[in-house]
Length: 347
Image (cartoon, rainbow, N blue to C red; front, side, top):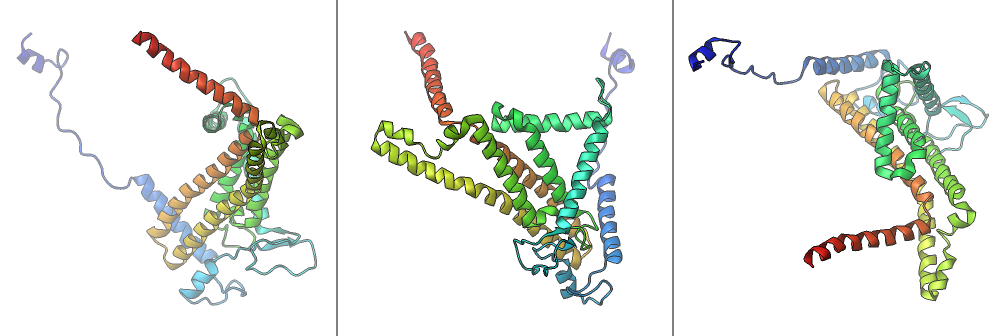
């Protein structure tokens, strides 16, 4: 068949391709609708929950821009929703408070926990061999996060994957809920992670878990031996003194872990809410939308950091000194094994 016949017959050959369609540039329709929705929610929140001066009541006149900015700033101390004592509430500028009450951050955290537990129950209440959409989504999230955690912390972390996933989802939605009106605009609701008392509580729970697991897996003597290695004196006085010194440093670092976990999370979430509140109060435009998108990403990163560090701290707590000593000969043996084939080939 000639080339002319091939060109004429669409079955025997291929028709010459026309010009490629031009690609659409710019934002897609979905993104435009999302941006318009966020702006509409901001306008609705401004009308439904107008700013008012600190110490005043809703409806009081509020001058722009100073009063708008001040009303959008949340002081560190949470607002007590239900007080359990007759004592006066702590000042709004206090960072860590000891006041028996159900605060707005605790109430919001309970609502987030109820939503997470209710969603997990609805997606897994009728488990099937051929999963539906809800079960498929649950299994996808669980397996993806589980593989990610094991890939970072190692195979020993697999029994603690549920703790890692629970911390991640709780912290993630505690962070994200602050981006949804009316949370942060009414006194009864506030993002839990923007309260340092909540982040300290979660960090202390994490701190308790990895130390309890350390004692359970290694025993009291084995776990305390990581910080007080008196057995190093068998190698000499110098080795013993160095071992005790290093062990005491590691012991002090253990008490730094909950501080870093709590303050990192609180600082990033509280600072992000302050920046977002100021920009939203000054202008209802694309800048708050861009900041909300940035906060969504940063909040997810902070939740991942908190949960990953918790998982890594657990795996470090259950690892004894003998494990490290076993790794060294294995690595040395692997090194000799790598050189052996090369020596044989050279011979």
